[in-house]
View (cartoon, rainbow, N blue to C red):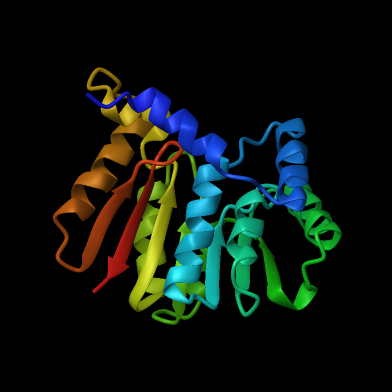
Length: 208
């Protein structure tokens, strides 16, 4: 029998975060913004490396913990990151600067992603990360798949809703939407879906 709790704890402790990302994590927590876990960040960095992704869109910058992981493993990567909270966005920019990330590698867009994504070029991005944790994740994922090129990847963080998706008695709006998201793409022939059990889950969709 697998001890899931021990495996998850060991997996998180296995990751050594770069100092700049640890600094961003600390700042994020101080601002009351829950960042992705170290194991989730490490997986995203590996995804960039394995796929040779150069053009990335991130939906939900926060204070840039995931952003820095996405930029970590490939110096050729360029990131467009969208955040509706201007204070968080400014803090993320300051943290990018302190991490030594060249300004030309990051384009920060302020506003609601559901308004911004339809104005972006469809079928042109290697990787789109949906870094949301509330209602609207299903619509954001649909929009993200429009942006992805064939063979491109959409990664949805927090896909298990902190574990609530696995609890049948939890039927709040957010959890129900995540179950719909997971169920729809599990049988969608236009994508290859995989659930990666790191942190509170990353759903990866490869566009066919």
